[in-house]
Image (cartoon, rainbow, N blue to C red):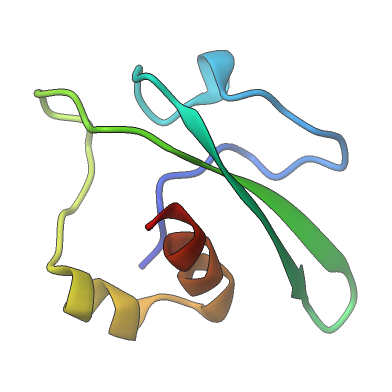
Length: 80
């Protein structure tokens, strides 16, 4: 399980054309996560999902929260 994301880059990336779908993206803060061999700072953006098929799998929040890797759980909490 994962949240919609853009490719991870070593430099800041705006959502623009790399966004998982077209929407009114807004800043929701940043999170820090440390993996065994590198540190990651993610800028979290959130948006209302417009109608349509975006190739996403929707699950109840409780199920998603229990299934997400810790880096995505931090991002989910920032977005909520």
